[in-house]
Amino acid sequence: MPRPVPEINASSMADIAFLLLIFFLMTTTMNVDTGLARMLPPMPDPNVKQDDVEVKKRNIFTVLINKSDKLLVRGEPMDLSMLKDKTKEFVMNPNNDPNLADQNEKEIPMIGMYKVSEGVVSLQNDRGTSYEMYMKVQNELVAAYNELREDLSRSMFGKSYDKLSKEEQEAIGKAIPSRISEAEPKNVGGK
Amino acid sequence: MARFQRKGKGGMPAISTASLPDIVFMLLFFFMVSTTLRETSLMVKSSLPEATEVAKLEKKSLVSYIYVGPPIKSMQTLYGTEPRIQLNDSFKTLDDIRDFISSERDAMSESDRPLLTTSLKVDEETRMGIVTDIKQELRKASALKINYAARRVEKK
Image (tube, rainbow over all chains, first blue to last red; front, side, top):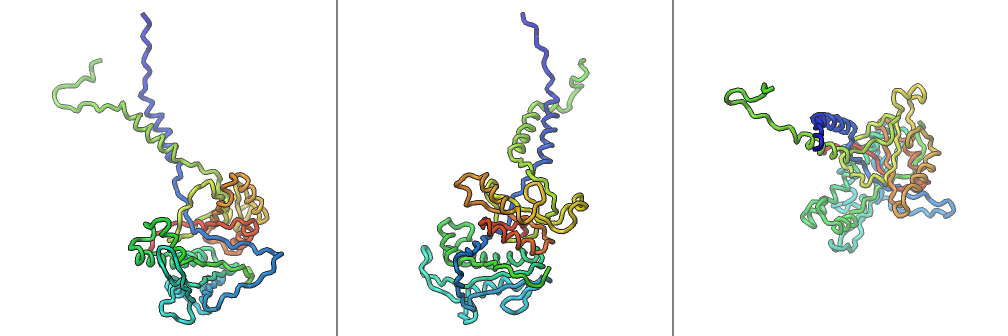
């Protein structure tokens, strides 16, 4: 007859497991990285002669931020809270104002004929602008485009933009292209 | 040792704790799997700005990070308080960005290379000068997809 094996006390197993559990709880970072996605313009080739693309004055919406974080929009000082609505008005140009963005009728799949805005938002900043302000302005501009897309999506498909299929989202993206250009840096105003 | 036998009437029957380790192990495995240990230790202060229109950064393997901000307290005696650039685990200068991007590219598989995204984690108190310089360097390195890291806040 084999000798009976003494049973190992397993009650401390829970303690060990708890210890490990607490270690992983403390070291876990489950934060998802979020941010504003942007594309930089490609570096101009020095060998190729630059032919300046003429953009009509009415189609440019210049936003300047100076080193004391003040906004100058199309030559006029503006408060940050107004920027989003002004951008929307500029891009859509609901009253066909000759000073706001031109529109160009185009055939877009799933939507049909749509007046695509020619407007370009040009964002310029000083070297002394604070990053916080810069991000606030970027955020307002992205918000303006997002709201326009949301409006179009609601009137075209009766759904929120997030709930559209990929093709539908692409169609909306073509109808309201987000044109925010971060202009070539200019050194003004020193440090 | 019959001390622990039930005395008299009533009294609660002891709840079996035999399955407690199982439950704890289950939680343990969950956290082990979902944990991402921080790969780089931050040497700059970076409290990110707030934004409402943020998008999630998908696929961590395609993202490389550039941290910009004033050095943390313990580093300030050595490096001062001016905003600096941190790549991987050390302070670098603007000229190192191109090397950094190309080494990040080399580490990726051929098909993923065009998808490389650079996430700029910039402290909100930084001035734009250094950020503009970094953007120019990234354009020279033709790493055009960038992402300004920001904290999500709800719309007012």
